[in-house]
Image (tube, rainbow, N blue to C red; front, side, top):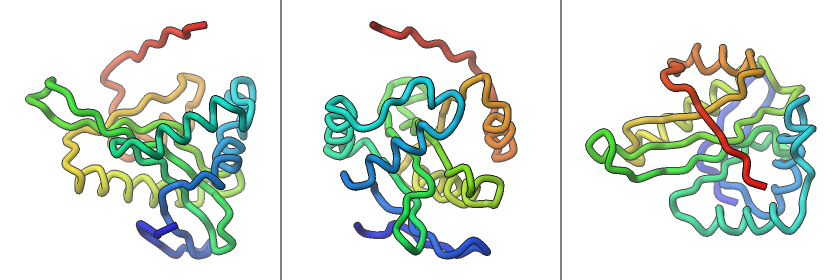
Length: 161
């Protein structure tokens, strides 16, 4: 569990690191910890365990956690690096499942985490970072806009059953 970065704030000392298998239940709890996630996330099961294994084995995936001084997971984000031909072959970084623990929100932790991720994407050669946020998440949209993200496209999804 090698630290990729560490930082201190009035809330304490935090470490950003790659997630390990033991972090999966805490990550899933963060994904469930809001009105939207609580309706679609169901905790650890065979599919989530297989998904973690696939993510962990893929060099183009970076599943991150922020842990406090007690090694409790307080934030998470998945970064996927996507090679493509569009924009003259610009490497893209896709941010997914960005969550900060409810009791840690609005205290600067998410900003510090996101700034580190942006710098890491730049270091890895990405020329564009993209993400989607649910239209019902007004606070998340305002947060990303305050960090320079622009709503330039209309996202679409097709749920396969």
